[in-house]
Structures are given as structure tokens and as C-alpha cells.
Image (cartoon, rainbow, N blue to C red; front, side):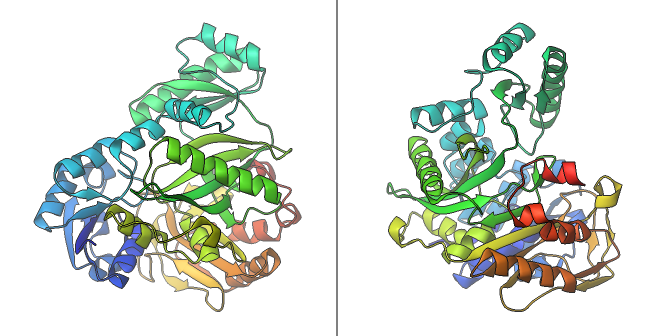
Length: 445
């Protein structure tokens, strides 16, 4: 096992990794930008190094500075967290070329799955359902129009690189397809330096269901059941829960087995997530793989009792998974709410500022994963996530009651947050009865 690792990230996930390491007796080295100087979680690391100015492009995305910090800190491995460089195959390759273990998949597997077109091809080989669409990248308008005619409108234009909803457009006719093709390619080029796009049939009223997987270097690939991430805004997840409510048991088993087949086909190791959309008839289709730990991993931890971060470390160190699929439970119901510094009443505009009062809910079944504290200043430079409120109870009904109680206790003053919207979501009859799809928030609010 490693004696010392560096965490190439910030905020909530950096703190989560620090805690997991300290429970295992592993020393940690943190890095931070000038904007994060003085953050309380940095005091919990054994060492911390400033790696640049506030913008991520001048700090958390600079591979050379992170590697320099790792060498000065004398670490054996780097945990990338999520976001920033976590799915950057070149970063993973550089780490290992410097004899520093990257706590994640190989750069080859990451590259195969990071490109959505090649990931789709792997899914077909693994006999995993994919949404009907183009066989590869769409090079021009004529090809796009031909494919749309073959599969029928509406269609979804998707960037082959990146994620987070960037480079995606829905087209319901030829004119919208032509305009969307250019807009998606331009946005993808700007965001990911890759203008490649492809086309899929747009599945109406889908749910978003993903499967948590864990694979070691000895051929063991396991799933930790599924999560429902249907509650989204502009392709950004808001609420996640496990198990997926209303999903027939046979579909649950099939979708988890499909995820395992794909991960084996990709020769993938460490933690990852295989994402699917599920249509109103419960037919599921593969959409992408997130080759890293997910923001919503706590719900899988709570229903299975498995610490995913610690298992990431063990797998990266070459240990064999001591788990068996038949022994991985899915106990109770876990629900996570992402709390963002945004104003839902003002088009979700970011709300940077100082947190002047913070009252965190507690009690049985409540978990709060966050790096913020009273007096913390939320800056304008990074993702607006300030924390994750997670509840776990024996049934979904009890979990929803616990979440509502926790939200009523929650106080964050000085900035605007998504808590008021969350109170409406968890009390909405459609959400309670699982009669929602990925556009529910935008249609309802």
C-alpha cells in the first residue's frame, strides 16, 4: 500500500480523499490555487503546495506544476478526484512515466472510453444496447441529413469528447440539424479542443440510470448496483439515488451485467461509472463511461457499505479485490442532493460570496460531504458545488422524509443556494411517484 499520495484536486473531493487516506494510515499532500489559500481542509493534509493563480488553467489544469508538487512531496501516487484532469489520458500517462501511480484506469483504457465514438463501438462489441445513430463522426451536413432521415427525428447531436452537456443539441427538423451541427462543433472545439460530433436518435422522456463499477488488475470486475440521476438541469445532475426507484428487478440485473461486460471489454481497472438512458418502456441504451470517481459515489457507498475511495487506493496499489458480486448488498435507499451556490430564481446564476451563517443538518441517516464552513468565501472561479447532502434509510419513503426534515434544518446565509428548489423537488408528487424524466426540472421550473 502507498505511504504518501498527492491529491490533484480541491474542495469537497480533496477532503473526501484526505479522510479516506488518513483512515488507512496514508499521508497526503494537497495542492491549491491562490484562490483556495487558507481553506480549512488544507490544514488536514500533511503538506500543501500552492500551484498557481485562481483560474484552473493557471493551477489545477497545469500538469507540470502538479508533477513538480508530487516530486517535491515525495509521493508514490496521485488521486485526481473528479473534474479537472481526472479523465485526461495524457495526465495519467505522464504520472506513470514519472514513476508515480495514477489512481485510476490506464491511459489506454481512458482514451478508449473517453472518446464517445470509440466507447460506442466497444459497447456494440460487448453486446450492450446503444442508441441508433451514426457509425462514427459526422463530417458534413449531407451525412447528417442522411442519417437523420434513416433514424428519424428528433436526433441528438453530441460531441465525441468531454461531457457536462457541452457540445450537445437536439434537432427536430433539417433546419435545426444544420444549425445545431455547427453550434455543437463550435462549442466542443472551444471546450475540449475537439470539434468532432456524432448523431444519435433522441430518446423522448428518458430516465438517466448509471452503474457503479469497480475492477482490479487481476481480472475481477464488479458492479455496486445502479443510481438514478434523472433529476438534471442542462445535463447537470441535481439529485441522485440508489437503487433507481421503479426500475423492474430484471432490468436492474440486466443493466448491471451490461455495464460489467463493457468494462471487461475495455480492459478497464479502478472505479468507474457506466451511464445509460432508459426509455418509458424500460429499454436501456449505453451513452458513456465516466472513467473516474463520480460526485454521487456516496449513495453507492451507503447502500453497499463499501468505501469506494479506499478501494480505489487498494486497486491502484495492485491489491486484489476482496469482494464477491454475490456478497455486495443493496440495502435501503440513499438519496443525494447537490447543493450549489446558485440562484434558482435568476436562471441559476452563480452566487459567489461569503457564507455568513451555516447550520448543517444532522441526526440518524444524514451525511454532509463538504469543504465549506461559516466564513468560507465561495469564489467565482470553479464549479458552484458547495456540498452534498445525503440521506440513507431502510425505504425510499423514509429517505424522502429524512431529506425533507434535513432541508428544513439547513441554513446557509450570505449566498443564494439551490436548497429552496430542492424543497420543492422532494415534495413534488411527480418526483415522489417517479413520474419524471431528464427534462422535468426545466419543464416544471
